Image 1 (cartoon, rainbow, N blue to C red):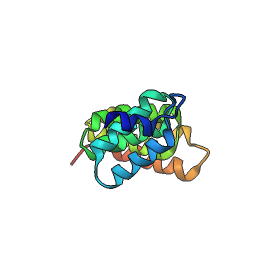
Image 2: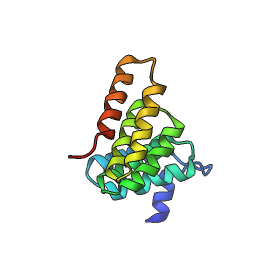
Image 3: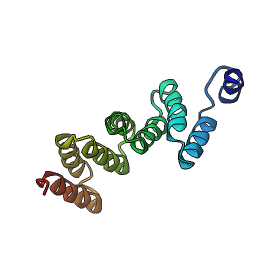
Length: 137
């Protein structure tokens, strides 16, 4: 079975068929098979170190499995590759869920500054920063 899998996910030249693997990983994740999907996303992340989709998908799996600290690590890598606002929001959420309040606070403030040109995003990150620094009731 493993040989059959290798034939499906690798091209004859030995290169990973990234789009095929990611498509199947996303299908598994949508079907609620986060652990199986994580294995595929991890393969993409390992073989394609600059694969945003590999790290971001892996983080989504970790969040569904309740592994918040692992999700934070994967999201950090995804955010380093592509500084997209939605990744920042996911990273802040994962950091809070992992009990990393100071990291969430730092990232919210950093993003408010980084996205200062986009007034709507800037306001959303500033509001999030204020929410994060408020003491829990």
